[in-house]
Image (tube, rainbow, N blue to C red; front, side, top):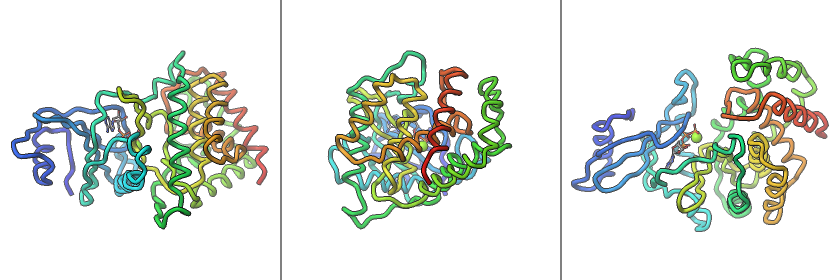
Length: 331
Ligand SMILES: Nc1ncnc2c1ncn2[C@@H]1O[C@H](COP(=O)(O)OP(=O)(O)OP(=O)(O)O)[C@@H](O)[C@H]1O
Ligand SMILES: [Mg+2]
């Protein structure tokens, strides 16, 4: 196994060994292309061009003590492969140019110095309708075109789903999960306490978690939130489908809506997201709202914290609404 490091010579040697450089091509610089936690991602500049390489390891890059499935980059590659048959979807993602199955490395087209949409969490940032339309349409087109009915392919991505399942449905509700919520925002710990002690709520969450783990009919990106949407000169691009699987679209859209809410987007943006989606595809709104609720819980109380700007009261309100939705869910 080659373990890539942020060292020009190591990277050049690796690329040469794979014949991923042209004759006479030299690596001139390497840089971190943007925020990422899970994988080792690097922008490689040569005397001719630039591209991105992304290696998955058997741990989380930012938290090496946390195990993660090493094969995840190959699942990500599979998503690119499936989407490549649909030109309108394909052109909204970078091209996947090469795959190294032995070392779990992807070689991707460089989208340039682009930012992701996590700036939306900042105060006063509002998604424009055209951007929202593109984001929602990509999901709707993905869910309606890439179905198991239409193809023989399966992509369970079981291990990644199990990892995500723990972070969404289990850890946030553990009394002791190693996270000091008051260090995130003073007062958050005491707001969390009643939810962690509510067995009825936990029962509902367990059922919803089982639903996430079941296979469904549509290919989902699996991590469809502002960190996976990139603002480039050529418009919005979608990256990082390492959590992809065939599941229920309500999970995907539920997650997206949760992030619009945590980014404090106007109510109109949220209702337009629903409208744009349902103009193209079917959606069980109740189930979708339940997934929104659980995503809000896990992002406000769980380990995968976001750079949220909303204050304690707003977080409390979102949790109250989410609790209402989950506790009245009809299981
Ligand atoms: N093809 C690309 N072109 C330009 N920049 C990219 C490209 N792919 C990734 N990046 C940048 O690198 C960052 C990390 O990439 P990516 O999200 O794929 O990695 P990750 O380790 O899976 O991250 P996360 O922990 O958020 O899941 C992105 O936020 C983006 O800024
Ligand atoms: Mg990722």
